[in-house]
Image 1: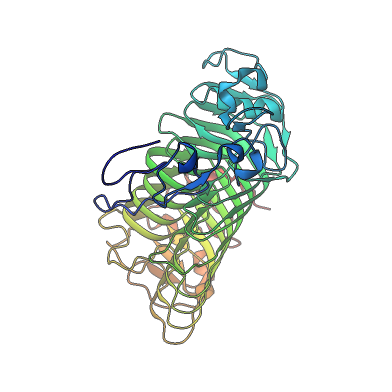
Image 2: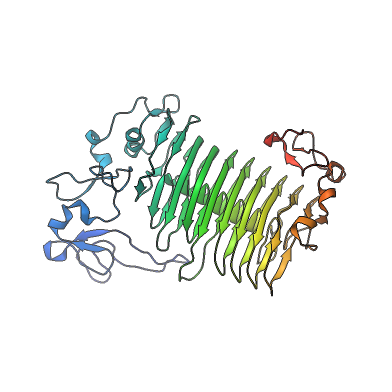
Length: 459
């Protein structure tokens, strides 16, 4: 029972606007019935009787260790006779003991799904995956690992068959803390689905604040706010390097104010540097689809270097801010990158570009774009405006090109448009100062420039 005057409640005292933040919401949260000593009820959360508190089925969407139908996270425990759920991490007898000490020089070893779930006991420890895991495609109601504060080394192994449906945020990891890191991990055949007005959905993580190195994802993501192949959102400062995503992403609009962002790697990114990464993404949205790109839907402060994107972005009428590499970018340095993303929209589209598009004027707001090219096709409906072959707005790029033939667009605020045959000549780029010793390679006359780390062999 909570007693007092004004804003009091059994779960949350009140729902306020604080600064520019949105109002708080509750989802799948419970408190004891006011008639049985709990409360009071102020409409925030759901009250349950004492008898209902002792039945796991009354906690919809919760992941219990005693049952498998709700996923493998096994966050909660409610054994027979218990009065209410307890976090399973508090009952050490329910979780296996892991080999190792959880330190950087002796990480806990993960060899089974049960071992994987036991990470909830020590979220700040160091772990190493010591075998491939198959989750079997069983639907999860919660991210298998809701929070990672420590370090996870995939050991070059893979996790297969992740299937997650969550109303807020999610991926293999729910939230990756700023002190955490993930490396050398592959996640394949994943199916991530948001619900209601989800916040951030991605295959590796819903919300990421830690460094990610040499991680690879493949699968499908579906939701309505911030969606990415690797992560829904990234809050830096952090580095994402040598990562790949082969994904299909569908943004499902809902009746709501505002919108979301969609990217092949990340939906919304802040203070993040991406290097030596690639995304092959099929991204789709309906009418008024806003903010999508091969790497990021929206990127604020950061850098993209030696990265490339392939695939397609399709949208309905009145779409805006769709770019082959990024939809919206503020104060972002882009160097030695290319985009081969086909963009298709309905009528009345705005700010569509082969590399970067931005509706607020200034694709990079002062950040340079250097030694980049785009070659994707752009097809928009009648009444569309600000359709550019390379960059819609921004500071003048240096030594940048777009294929005016394959794109079907002859104009761009910046960059140089060339026919395909000239785009596939090494001399075109060497005269512009491109580095073909350390960064780029080309099969002269047969292909566009490729990044050396792709290791493309010419016949």
